[in-house]
Image (cartoon, rainbow over all chains, first blue to last red; front, side):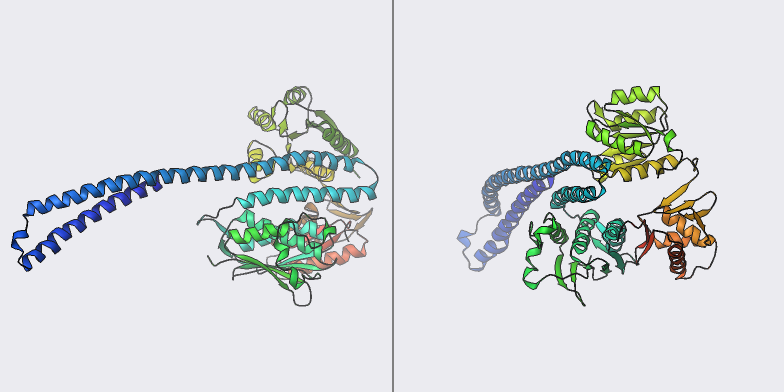
Length: 299
Length: 234
């Protein structure tokens, strides 16, 4: 806050100083020798009178600078008030999403615990899957709002290799339960970028969940990290048709309405990519399936 | 099948949502735990003063205050009961707050009762294996004291190294065990662990388990680690 005001004051002082220097140069370096040169001796004024001119110029300049400074300070104040309102709104939105998630989790916990206490295993299995799906959507809504508010600082660093290994280990039980395998390639040494670990984990999680959804049982999902720097998530599924490749990253776009997703997953991925100054795209995997590529600028 | 001895374990469940409390209690009683349920901090304090509990399950948002305050007071009074915190708030902050206040573990709502009982068992085992440790996955049991591995009731013969690998996998059944953890376990027996050594032991172990008719499977996840699943999946 002080820095904005400091800049205004600094600019005011610099303006006054520059006016003074220019006035002195005009009076003593240009006009005075010129008059002497052309012999307009009558018009040559005394040095004292010339300092008088400088004083008058400075007085006018000072008045102008004072007006402009006051105006600038007002504008800075207005801008700061707007920033503050925006920040508060962001915070409110995040708190709201967190509250919603919180309020939904308790009834979901009741539902889940009730299902666990019932004996009809077949019906329960289906219903538990539904509860898990709703839970995941609640999580995604929360993640979405948290990621929306992310602002990357110059000192925020993240290790893509670490993000990939830890997310693969975290998701492996789910992947195995869904009858697929997961592997990580290229994560032997750190790949540092200017990034936010939480956001990158969320992006990768959504890509892997997406890969589970659209690949065949028994297939392997590959996370490939490279020094480019990039993360590639490769599945052996049916791939993404060319005309859908842009749309799938839109919020609430769902390739398959029956799949029961929230339609938020890939839009979270895109937002994370953009917040990192990177991009996400989808290509065909050699031998069938798709490759989602998250690429980042070099640090 | 509940392990022997859990019936003596008395658990205090502090949860204000009556229905959640009922179902969780039902689930835990099925696993042979003895459970007392209370819904407020005041009742929890009274219960803790009157009965000897082996563990407390604590919800964070309670009608007469924050569960964490109870936990802090409780720890400040130098009482050492394992405490598992239940919360609907996620985010790193809450977790850190909970664990700093003296919680031993943390579970985010909603959760599977199965997951809850697994966590409780892990906490109850903690004091240096007082209960003697019997690991179970599918039809496979591992008695860590007698160093015996059984499929159903039949003891199967496996080497010491494979047993140590299996123990690590079973301790974290359903979760990933990184390759270097297994490597470090094998170093205990053998100074020179070749690059493929872990994979070789795993594949021998896998073969032996299949031959013996074990329902578990060991998955190799390249670049991630190994995961033992109880065979409930495909």
